[in-house]
Structures are given as C-alpha cells and as structure tokens.
Length: 114
Image 1 (tube, rainbow, N blue to C red):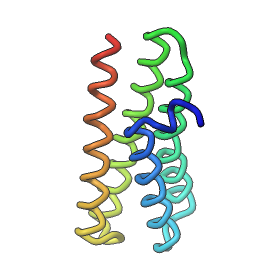
Image 2 (image 1 turned 180 degrees about the vertical axis):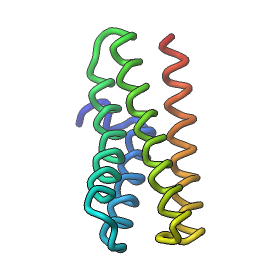
Image 3 (image 1 turned 60 degrees about the horizontal axis):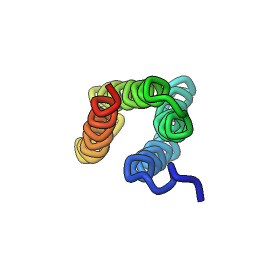
Image 4 (image 1 turned 30 degrees about the vertical axis):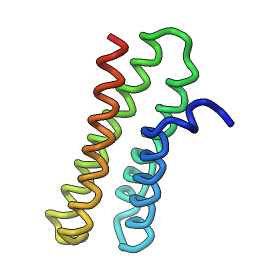
C-alpha cells in the first residue's frame, strides 16, 4: 500500500469523485459537463496522490493547491446544475458538505507546508 492511500483526505476525495460520477450516470448532462465534472473530481484525488509523492514541501504544497482548486471547480459545476434544476437541493447540499470538508482539510495541509 502506498502512503497516500492512508490519508483521510485521499479517501474522502475518492468518495467525492464516486458521488460525482454517480450524478453523471444518473442525469443526462451535456457531454462537456460530464467530462468537466468527471475530470475535475478525479483531479482532486490524483493531485493529492501526486503531491504526497513529492519530496519538497513547495512541490507537495503546489499539488495540494491544485487539488483544492479542483474542489472549487466541482462546486461551481454543481452550483450551476443546481441552479438549472438538474440536481436536487439534497444532492447539491450533500456534495457541498463533502466538498467543504475536502477544501478545509486541503487548506490546512497547504498552510502547514507554507
């Protein structure tokens, strides 16, 4: 097992990505929305993993910053889907809670590497 697989933030990122993929499978979204949400949510976990593999603090920090930016990207997509009444209030809220948790954890990790 790789060290990053034990990180709580990585585990939560995987859960968040699976939730986003389930939305993609459930709703008939525009192909570019499917692509962007899928890529952005996957990017969170991938950047956490890649950052964990870096040796220098600045390198790790940069990947965690990118992961956090991908969280924001997902939230923007979900917000628009909610505004367009494509996803329900409950789905939006549940994803928003998970995104907020990821953002907070990543912020603390970034701050600790400054």
